[in-house]
Length: 215
Image (cartoon, rainbow, N blue to C red; front, top):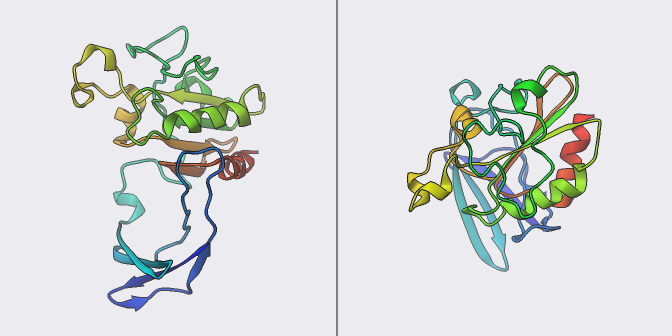
């Protein structure tokens, strides 16, 4: 566990926060620090690990100025490839074997009265090497459940048609959401309001907690 302090213009904001590491089922341990910033601006995040001082900075914006879907907002519709409709995404799933989350597209899923879980991830082309393990965890945690609609959306539209991924077009969902990183997990309630979002890495325990918020 590590203790984090948050400061703004050299003054500490709130009390220090102790965070326990997570690593169950993912390739890299991480420490999820949850906090609410009082106002926009540049914040310092400090901690100490084995006598080594660690520092990072976070630029905080007003929610209205953030393009990507945020917790507390309704998940926007977007086309996600299914077995019956690829939306020109090829392949629709780079997991081997293919995951079971391509039965219904997101636009159809919204408004059904069921919570929706969407994972933006590309196991074969992931820049962080976390997409495959997180998709595997989602198959373990949510595969076969009928109280949720679970959707996997790939990042790239045509990865096999280009010599370099930087030349690949984005698939419809990341293009619509203006998301340029992966993986990202969205969990909504029955009204399709986002109740949890996890970016870059989500372990087994944190994923279970997120999915529990949906129902």
